[in-house]
Structures are given as C-alpha cells and as structure tokens.
Length: 529
Image (cartoon, rainbow, N blue to C red):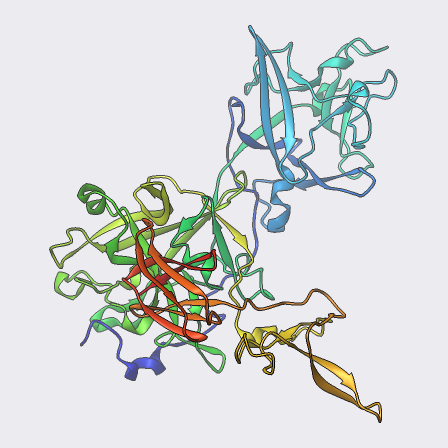
C-alpha cells in the first residue's frame, strides 16, 4: 500500500471534531517545594495549605485578593487566573542580611503592608504612598529563606507599639483580608513552589481569537522571516490519541497539536485527507552549516495538504519518509506554556524527520524546537536543536482574513466600509477607489450609491489596501499597482526585477523562497513556492 493516503481512504479519515479534544481544566503549574529562593525566579506562595494571590485591580486602585485551597490538588483554576498566584521574587543582600520583595504576575502589583503605627495590615490600596507602605519582607532576622527558616515577617513593624515581631500569614481565607499581619507566628509558615511550564493538551486555550475558532502567533524577534504562524489565521486542534487508519500498514495520524490552515469538514467531521496544516519542512533550510543541518537545525515551516504527506508511522525504513516527502510527524506539535514569559508558548516537534544530508534521500529523526535563527543580520523562524522549550510565541491578531468572515454571525453591531479596487485608477469615470454607501431617492426609499468617502456608523471601517502582493508557484502577483514602479528583491537586497506595472494585475517571475516586493516605497515580504 502506498505510504501516502489515497483519496479513496477519505471516508476512513472522517473523525468527529470533538472526539479527540479533552476538557479544558488547569491546575497551578507547581513542582516540588523550594528549599531556597532565587532572585528573579517565580513561585506560588502557600500558607496554611492555601495559595495566595492578587485577582485584579479596579479603577480606583483597589486590589482584590484571591486564594486556592490545597493548591497541589486543585484542578479547576481558570487558565487566565493562574498568573494571579505567581509571585516573582526579588532579593536584596547586604553581607549576610537578606530582604525580599514579591511582585504579582497577573496584576504587576507588589505585596505591601501598611507601616502606620496602629494600622498594620496588608495594603490593598495602590494609592497609599510608599512612605506609608513597605514591600520589604524577611525570614527570621534577615536570614535567607530555607525549609526551616520559613516564617514571613514584615520587618519594618517591629518598632511599633506592642509589636515585637510582625508575622504575615493567611489566617482568615473568608474574611475581608485573606492575608493579615499578626503577632501569631503559627500562620506565617510559608512554602514556595517553583513554577514550571505546562503542556497544552487542548486547543481551546489557543483558539481564543476569531470567535474561538482560530489563532495566530507572533514571534519574539524583530522582522522575522518565514513566520507563517502570523501570516495565516490558524485553527489549532489537539489529537489526544493516534488515529489508527490502517493497522496492518502502520498508517496513522500521530497524537499532537495540529495547526490547520484549511480544515475541511464533512458534516461534523474533519476530512483530514483534504485539509491542510503547518509542518516543518524536511528538505530546504535557511543558511546553516552542514553540521547544523545534520542536527536538524534551520528547517522552516510550510503549509502542506495532509493527503500529500507520508503517513507511515512504523519501523520499516523503506516505508518511512525520504527525499522531498514530508512526514506526518513533522506536523504533530507539542505546545508548552510558560507563566513567566511575555512570549509564553513554545512549539516542539518530537519526531521531526528531515534530510540530514542534502545529497542523500534518506531521512534522520530528531526532536526540534521552533525558534529565531539569525544569519547575516536576518531573523528566520526555523527549527532549533534544544533540550529546553524555546518560549518565543504569543497569540496575536492577524491581518489575514477570509472575505466571508466579515459577515457577522454573533448578532453584534458592526460596520464596514466597502471600497472598489477594480477599474482604472487614472480614469475618473470608473468607480475605482470609491465607496459603496446608502442614499435616498425622491420617494425617500433607501438605495445603494457610490461616494468618494464613507463614514461608518459603528466600530471602525476596514479599508482594503490598494496594492496587494501574492506569492505563488515561481511568481509573485501584484494587484492594484497600474502605472507604478514594482521592485522585487531577495532577502539579501539583490534586485530580481524592476518594472512599471502595465495593468492592475501583474505577474513577475521570482525564485523560490522569501522575496521583498516594493511598490512606491512600501515593501511587502512574500513566500514564493
């Protein structure tokens, strides 16, 4: 049987869209209790088996506290609330004296206590001046935190009337103040759990944009070439268990997170064969050494139809991907999430198959992560060989959108400015550049008409660009640039073509890869296949 799926097998690949997605429930991302605190590291703060945090800050600057009981077992914390329980620790050390400050990850607010004599408490009003509230804490007498030296103390209150040692602890999780200042040291025993990353095993969290049906990723790197995660509006889908299509021939779709660029549906089921996803390329690389290539470094991400991929997952070498084939493993991503990074997501391909030697057809296998690779001053999104996740992605809106998605399906008021781009820009008799709007005839019946400008009545108008650049198979197509100078160059700045557009639809031959198309000074990067 062919290593790829035949279109005749489409029916066997129709799987329910929800059958392989797990429920969306999270627990606090904690590992073992810390025996020491490190400057700049983040932890979950626990007292009396209660995790403490800041939930929000209102318009008046008042902080709301929050808590989770038995945090090592809790598994229904809303994902967006997890940062509320994470504190970044800052340590000041003078000789053998240690002072600690705690900054909340969700709100950005520092844990403080009121220092006014007689008003000792955890300060939840951000408007209170620093002269009346301190963020300096200690353990013992300015000793380093340890498993035995673990009682949290508000050090600047020891001179207050009737206070010898001001302990800070959770004493009443149902009162107006979850955390309080007290002379009772029993509540002040503090355990810090180191924060670890979590594996994202549901697509729900990722598909929070576009009416919860799509996601785009920005990469942590300026002007990154090849970030198809931003150029496309994707739909993430988590396959919890491998889909066994032909057990006798080891034809499967492996478990993992898939990023659909075109998810074809047959009723309520996914037509996997005819759908397209993102995958790490198996042959061409960006500029890397032979040694880097051999290790799996420098391979870019491309869009590929699943039916065109090698879907063999067995152990027979002759049936595995080779040459220009792309293995289904190259599309099965593992997603990790960090709660301490501004770019919180890391993407890994555990079973990446690739052409180790460009002169040989056989493929090697490696575990690779996606990251930013810089060569010659140019940043590329490409595979990296790394032991630890590379947190380099964050969710963002994209400029790519299908026309039908302008239609409102959620009964929310919206207004769009519709502009005509057909016709001749230099002919005043055409509708080129004009807007479709509404007017009234003599009988006061509402009619559509043409206007030079338009004023939307709700939200913001969306105005299409007059010039559109599209990458194709060996060509770039430039639309809406009649009479304008078009320059096509490679990423090294070498000019490939320079011409005046004779019409509003010009096709120019270009080499495979990333090219830069400039029209009247406005440059656009596109990928030529």
